[in-house]
Length: 130
Image (cartoon, rainbow, N blue to C red; front, side, top):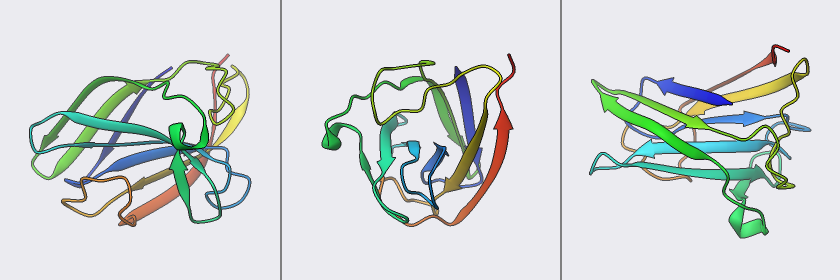
């Protein structure tokens, strides 16, 4: 599946899928455009209600693939691909017709890291078209 994340920030942007509660057990993708214009991206997993850690640090795999990224006029946009089923226990399995809770957030300007607290966040439910 191909996703595009965009937000009014020069910091990180993220999306998460299917938390059990708050951020816990959600599969996240976090990314930012660094000072050289390269996209830095990481898959994380919700380790608590307000905490997360990289899939790799938990014994999982990094399965996200960057397709493009840019930062212009205080706006960051990242396009990436995820497999429908990576086989990684820390990733979400995407099944056409299923409904997913989607968490979206972005960090403050200049937060080129995976740890700064979000500046804005929201969530919604999305059904994957069959």
